Length: 211
Image 1 (cartoon, rainbow, N blue to C red):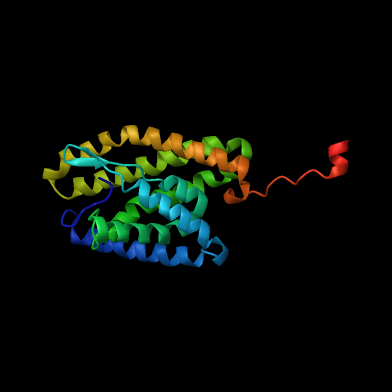
Image 2: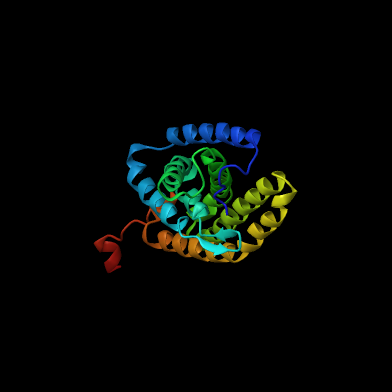
């Protein structure tokens, strides 16, 4: 349950995260170039679908996030894309909530930005792309689940079992997310390296091919 529903977290936590989320989205918009809009829309749609598929586990649920992948591909620009996706999920499907939009964005988006700073450099290098995907995928889900568990734990002793369940439920998701992200980044490194900020290898000239 990384999508926090309304009425669980305390008002100061929700208000503080809303301020942080607004600042992050604002900064992310400044880092979003017009030519990056199509890629951002596609990656945001992937996040929307992946995080929409919930698997119920007792009173909680688990789902893929793709936030590590978004961080590697978009950097700070992932936050505006996530904000739109989370808002649509809350309004049309009841996942999370409108008043907890900032809280959910911080829990999911902060790990994505951290993954960007930790693994983007390795992802740009062809030989380190697969390992970077593994790390970003695992970190994205693991840190998001940890933040969600902390919010639940701080909401009262009654939520401690739910906090432990959230962590346990996302252990297999961490493995799955790491593998999926690694496969996606590894593929992009081979077929579209510019998506990772790396210039594609120059094509061989006829003379070079003959040599």
